[in-house]
Amino acid sequence: MAGRFYYIFILIFLLSWVTLSAQERKIVQFSGLISSVGGELPVPFVTVTNISYNSQVHAANNEGFFSFVAHVGDTIRFTSVGFEPAEFVIPETALDKFTAKINMKSLVIELPAVMPFPWASIEEFNMAFMALDVSDDNISRIRNSLSPEALAALSQVVPRSAEEIQTFNSMQRHINMSNKTINQRFANPLFSPFAWGSFINSIVKGDYSRKRLEY
Image (cartoon, rainbow, N blue to C red; front, side):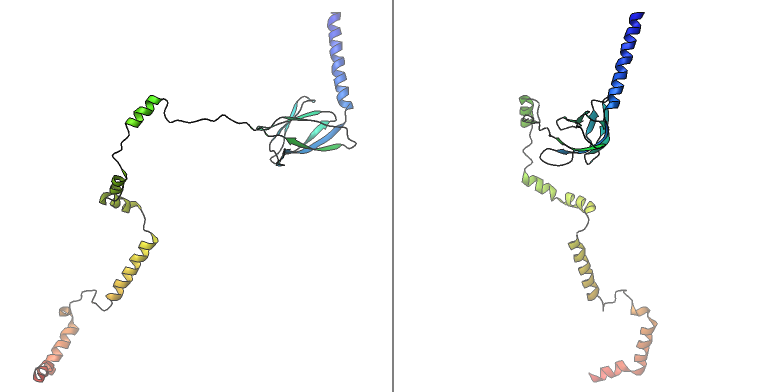
C-alpha cells in the first residue's frame, strides 16, 4: 500500500514539474513565411507541428504564412508533400513575438525509364501484326470518303460555310435583277378586263385597218 502511494506521489511530482517548467518558459506569438529553397516561391498548406508541446498541429495558408502561440525553445517541425521535412527551434527573444523565414527543400525523385508496349507478349504482337488489313490503302479511303453516299450524309450534318452562303445570296440577287421585267406572276392577259377593253377600242377606232393600209 505504501509503495502505491509512493508511485502516485512521484507521478504527481513529475506532472507538477512539467507544468511549472512549461509555465516558466516564455510564451511568444510565432509567425513566419515558408518558401522553397532557391525558387523563393511560397509553399502552401504546410503542416506545422509543435513537437515540444503535445505535438500541436497547425497549418499554413495558401501563401505559406503561419502564426500561432508557442514557447521559447519549442521545436517546430514543417512537413509537406514533395518537400523534405524541416525543423526550427524558437530562440530567446526580448519581445512577445518572433517572426522567422522557413526554407524547405523540394524532393526531386527520378523514376526509372519505362517503355510501354500495347501488347502483353511477343506472341500477341505477332498475332496482331498478322491480322492487319492492308487492303484499305489511301486511294480506297479517299474514294470511300468522296462517294455520293458519304457526301450526302455529310451534307445533312455539316453546316454551310460563309463562302457558300455568300455565293447563294449573290446568285439570288442576280436572278432577281434579271427577272425584274419578266412577268413573274404568270398573269394571263385573256382574263384581264383592261386588256379586252383596250383591244375593243382599237378595233372600233380602226387602228388595225390603218396598219394594213400602210403596207
